[in-house]
Image (cartoon, rainbow, N blue to C red):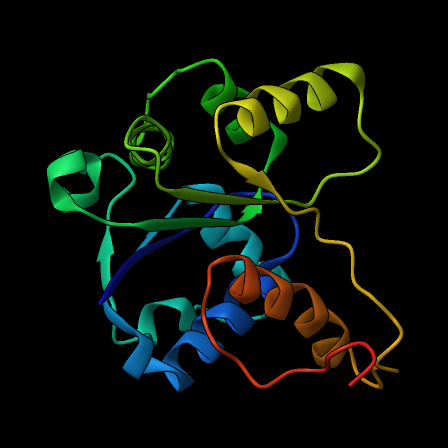
Length: 185
């Protein structure tokens, strides 16, 4: 059974984090443990973009940004998947350069060293060469860079449907079974 850690950083895109948590809640039979960690900026961005602090209402174990006693701060915790959504370029840069100065970057380092699945949903745009090289480094280290680039072929009608095209792709990348639009089906 899967053990998943979901992290949110201070990049714009709280809707992606919220929709991911909602969708993971709907497929509880596919995972054993779900842990959350948010940066201070992620909380502030959520409150700005979503308009409340309902991130605290989810029934998942939440860890502080500096709680290095969290089980996923060590490979022995056996978390097999980490999703950082949204992933700021600052966080991506720290991961790419092995700087584990908070729980998010430490957990990402652990996932990469254990050869498990790391999915970084990059939200910033445009990219500069430093961003691109950091994405390359994380990719060469085994991580997956999934830009928060929605698709339109399913003809989304709401902002939530549009953002779900990214979240559904992330869930696919994580190897979870979901009911979603499939091209050509």
